[in-house]
Length: 326
Image 1 (cartoon, one colour):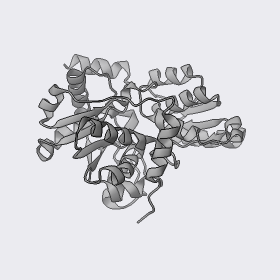
Image 2 (image 1 turned 90 degrees about the horizontal axis):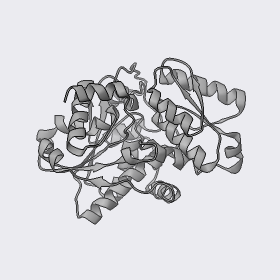
Image 3 (image 1 turned 45 degrees about the vertical axis):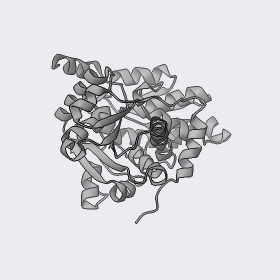
């Protein structure tokens, strides 16, 4: 068994570093959502972050560990959008130059937001993996520091602060949490959650959720083969990864209570349910937890579960599609 990549103390330290500028978003429940799923659903509103997505936690956690020399070099990352926004926002807050590499076809609203936060944007290639190649080239050419959105020791620590807040908020509400449904793109949210729950709520089960059209990590965990690759084909940009990652593969394989996939149609149906029951705007990847809860309703009936609305950066075409089908 591989060593666990982070400790609970890493998550506590991350929380201390980011708390001054990122107050905890609310944890809420909604009667209409509870009734629809026949379970008590606690909703963590990462869609209320300043970048409308949880990855600002990861970016700020990593950025606040840099030395003065590393900050002067500037940082670079490849992204499908939300991590790039988070890194650009953190760079603005900490006065660090940021370069973001994205492939063609990324949500134009996310591109505008990255530029709006002051980062330099490089658009090249057709997939996330292509953007990583561009990132590596610019590291060599310009001496920038690469902050990978998954394979960096502080990414699960930053994402783990979500679950730390959820547990603390549950304690204040007098809630006992049976399960968490967590979308898996690279896996930082789920690994961070399991790290916290080991110490704070060991009986809470973590169920990972991937898109059926981007199921590389799910399939690799099932087969115990980290070399599995799948070309992503999904509406959910935040889940559109086609490979496993050294930082998260073994913890996901060994730690998840269950690992399931959901289709794009199921993600869209979950988006509609969330929007009508909570009146919150979300993007497809943020609906993964609710989509899985719908599919596992019989097993979870009557239980208290948590889902993370991981982002709200939905493109207008997808939003129009959702609204037209209400």
